[in-house]
Length: 235
Image 1 (spheres, one colour):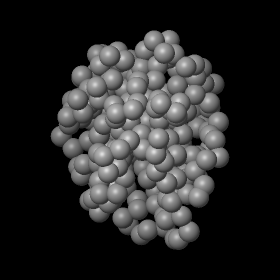
Image 2 (spheres, helix red, strand yellow):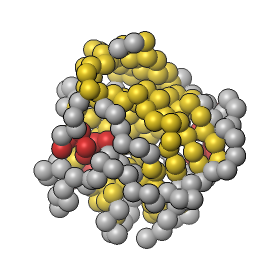
Image 3 (tube, one colour):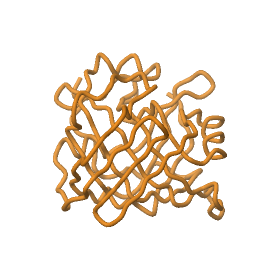
Image 4 (cartoon, helix red, strand yellow):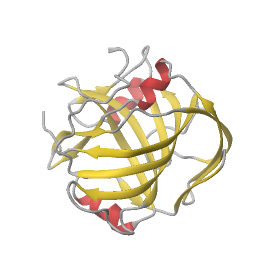
């Protein structure tokens, strides 16, 4: 069922935060996906969220510049790394909309091990690189894929831009049950971007079919200094 658009403004429901981060140079690539294909890939108790009857698969790349516990200082070295994640979009039985990560590539092994052990996120250690030079942006994910972007002008978000970026939580499995984790940050400052090249399959090993042609949405944001991740919440 189409539930309309998510709110472009975050709720203030991640307090008390258990983790804080800074996100830099965030790029969003999205392809349409049949909800029937997405449904078996989601945690129990959730279903695909849709816009005009279609859901989407996203490939999101970013640089995590600083990770810190709720009340402590930033973690040196281990808390800063490049990441590329593949994600779907779901809603649970309580109506909470959230990202479902299918794969999360990161170049920092201790961070990968911690994320796999605690919130049970599907991180893998790989040679992941995210680089920006002016309006040029380049991503490498191990041997799976690499792509480049040209960053364009600011964009006023329409329905598609809101749907693929305005997500304030995630669904995952912890101890055999599906939980919701709030993730709150200021609204994105979005810019249009152009895909200048793509080799390989960025959806490799995710269970999602290879992308059918070029993405229908390519966006960039310089990021945010205030990301707050809350404690997992049950149904």
